[in-house]
Length: 211
Length: 376
Image 1 (cartoon, rainbow over the protein chains, first blue to last red):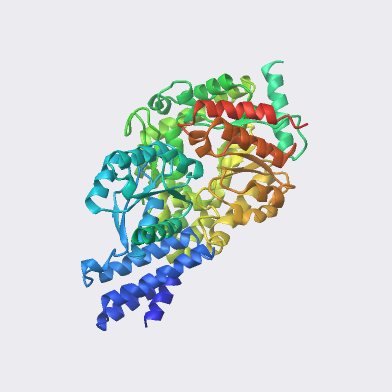
Image 2: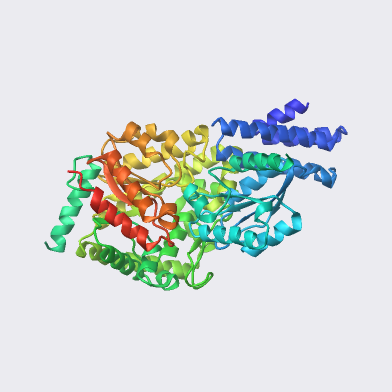
């Protein structure tokens, strides 16, 4: 049955996923085991994306299905069952209100078992600093579609440094016009052209911290 | 040389580039809607409020920089109502909703509903827009802006010509994918493609005549042959081949063919990365269209796969104008000219030089075009 759910999740079969989650809940299955099946499906989605079988259109749909499945499970899951892999603070930087790319990243990170503090859009640098202090996050994701976001990203990286947090956090940036030039300009640690790269970066950085 | 003679020389140069004929030097075209007012010291709030500001700012900027053959899309009228019409979305307007010298922003949200597809299928696009537009803009403001444009478009276009500049494009005919994606918001629209694909397709088919007809009408009224065929959210990098082949590409083909049949020049103003599907451009009429990418699509592949059939107008990246150096710009322009040689290249900022373009980078763009553009 878990294979069925994983496969349905990976194949983006929305109705089947929700039906199987409910069936397994009704049958008294462990909610964490059900969540794990969904996550395994999301891992397959990520692999298909990396293999260019899936694109952003599929990541968006997968994120939506996973979100609905998690909502069905949420009341039965212990709070410490979610977000065990690491903590990430994320937001679209000050002056930019675009949230599509950020939301895709948030969904994928949650599916990959990260504890994500989503600060929303038009986020001032100090809010990022405060969130990192509060959560102890080791990764910060800064999003922006417009080129006016570059300066805000730079200011945010500088604010983290001024608060003495820079050695403790890795900063990744993403968005439509982000390039290596922009990464250098902002002082971020890495940049990504797609949401799956954000998950890979977090996995890599969390491993480095664990060493 | 008179400005009219200059205009004719530049027009011929651009036309040769589109026809893939050798040029005496690579044509250079301006595009920097928000950069222009900032470059000449005009506040963005004033720029957004005054319908005459677009032409004033563009002409003052192009004259000051020198070296341009023309402008990509001949800007005229107030920018924010036009963007609302293009995106079917509410806009944050500087001086009203946003700080006076900030950039306007599309507030993408689910305004169009799933039920609206049925309305469109049953009643058509124009009837839908009549009921929809009040959801995203004050109709008195919208009516005034469109009225001004109708009354003054001719004089705006004449102003560009009087300064010796060619207006390459005059309006846009974006496929249904982009219209619906703007109104529904990207995420909700992608859900629709998976959940109710047949309904979405039926609505797309319904509105096609209303996309093509007005664009041909505007071109015919103004005498300008270039029409933007927009693509931003339908990009290959965002859509799986299965979805792209059904909901994006067939509509591009139909729009392009209809425009070419009408004697017009479709300019594929495509943001994002379309590299995966570049070979498909061979399905379009040869030497009749222009690709106008933003720096994300692979130009080596374009040249290799389609360079014998289509010119490229672009594609110095917006990020380079904002965060790069004059040396970066010089190198980028040099490499483009080396790649294309004397045929099929029109130098232009990719998409649009952004508001925070460093002036020295735009000046470097013009200087590099002058230095490397002499390929004959």
